[in-house]
Structures are given as C-alpha cells and as structure tokens.
Length: 414
Image (cartoon, rainbow, N blue to C red):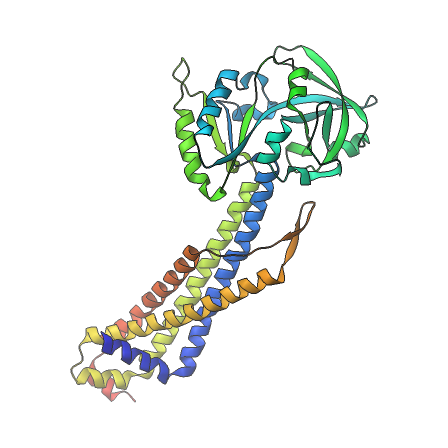
C-alpha cells in the first residue's frame, strides 16, 4: 500500500500542470462552499437573533389550543394562576433557561379622541421582558428607552402612529372587551413609537401587564403566554424536546394536554427565510460535488488515455489488476486531499480577513449590524470528507478501465 501511495504521488508530480489545474478547481469549489456557509450562517444567526431577542423569545408556552386561534387573541384560553405556578416550577429546574417573560396578548380599540382604529397589544412586566427580549428597546424609534415602559404608558406601533398622527407625550384611550364581554376603557400616555416588525400589519403595541389586567378586569394571576430565552440558542432542539415532553405530559380531567410548547420557528414567518438560506447552502454543496466529480473524472480519464503504454507495461510485468485499480484511485484520493487542503486554508484566511474588515449591513431599521462570519469544525470536516469521497468515486470508472485493459493491446497503442 505504501508503494502504491508513493507511486501515485510521483505520478501527480510528473503531470504538474494537470495536477495544479485540477487541485485549483477543487479548491475553488471548497472555498465557495465554506465562504457561503460562513457568511450565510452569520446572516441567518443575526436575523434569528433580531427576531427572537426583540420580540418572540426562543420558546413559548401556551394553553392547549391557544396558537390555533391566536389571530383572535382569545382571552378564554389564558393560563390560570395554578398553571402559571406549574410552569414556574418546571422552568426553575431547567438550567438552560436564562429568563422568561409573562405576557397578556389582547386586542383593543385605540382612539386619539378624534379617530379610532384597532390595535394588538402585548402586555408585559418590563423587568422580565427586557431580559427575555434584550433587543426590544432598540425597536423604540422615538421616545424614552430606559425601563421600557411604566404603568399608564403605551408603546404605539409606527404604522398606527403615522396613520393617526400620534406623537410621544400624547394622550390616548384604549377600549377593550374582557372575556365576559363587558367593555372597559382606560387612558394612556404615549411613551414611545415602536418599529413595526411584529404582528399582522405591524399593529403590535405594548403596555404594562398591570394595566392590561385593569383594562380587562382580571383578578389574580393570568397570562396568555410565557416566552422563554435560553442561555445558548444552539441548545434549542434538546431543551425544546425536554420541555415539550414535560409540559405535554400534564393532563387535565379529560386526559387531554393542558399546555402546548412551540419554538420561535413555529411562531414566525421569518423561519421560511432561514429555511431558504439552508436550501441555498444545500444547492451550493451540490454544485461543489458536480465541480469535483467532473474535474477528477476528466483528469483520470485523460491520465488513463495518456498512459496506456505505461499501463500495458506494468501489467505485462505481472502487476495485478487490483494494484492498477488501487493506483488510480489513490491518485484521485491525493488530488482530493491536495485540493481540500488548499481550499480550506484559503477559506479560513478569507473568513478571518472579513472579520477584520468589519463588514456591516442594515436589517430593517437596524443600521450598521456587523457581519461576523465563522464556520464550525463540523462544517469544515463534512465538506472536506464529501470532497475527498467524491474524488475517490470519480476515480473508480477510469481506474476500473485501466485495471481491465489488455496488456497486449495496450503495448500496441501508439
């Protein structure tokens, strides 16, 4: 085996130009894939961070059936005090949870005393919400950001503020029906204008949780959802699996689940964009496979054609077909090793240079977001192994042809 390896390496050195061009083609494919994975992964991670850290959280817990009717914001599917305590007990034992926020979601009529429209509201406790959605304050495009919100104040969505010509400091009134059907109204002062990144039509505003309870005449503890932030989003699949198992095993008197648990992926349409990025990455990998396959196969077919006399000579000397087969496969393997080594080195240098250059982009109203491309060892190893595997596979047909060649006919070839 060692002799075959030495002979294959020598053959590659004999045909320097062909070896160089082939290894460069392989390197180009590796660089394209690794750079795309690192840049798209950075953009995807930043986009997911903006969505989860400014409004959704990583995981949300609702009463069973709430999500199916969330468009109507049903108050009769709110979590009760007993259910909230159960949620707190389970989350307290989960070390991966960094924080959680209790929210009441409601619909109301919004009036500036001359015009009226509908509004969707998230009622929160500021201390909890700022820990669970740390980027939320960056969505406040006008008004005071410190402390997020106080009782008697409201954050108005930008679309609604423009339509009704509402400014920071203005007084408004909210009118809402509670779950029993009675109507109540309450005055608020506009604390800030909120960027319309969430909710249908960008109509999601925010008030204090205690104000929502007063507006809806809620006595005691009652919330629509519990939003959870994890210490590390990479732990999302395993943490979600554990929480889902624990919560959905809790049954009511009818032996039906009390809770439902969902990740941000189920709750946000932006997940479709993330899936598109993953799909593009997959197709880029397919292109890499095609480049490597065509390059290696072309080189090995030409190598067999140019070395027919050589193959006939070593075959006539008693070299077994399996040895000839192994020789050409080893040459393909070495070409894969050489191309991936060069490509990986270039990619890592390029990724480091992009981080030093501090490339920035805008996402919505977020300006100057820094692109931080990076790539994990698993991605590098998987790409390298795929390329080397394809290089070996592409060598099989030419190698088989060389191994089956008749030595007499080969020696007659001019």
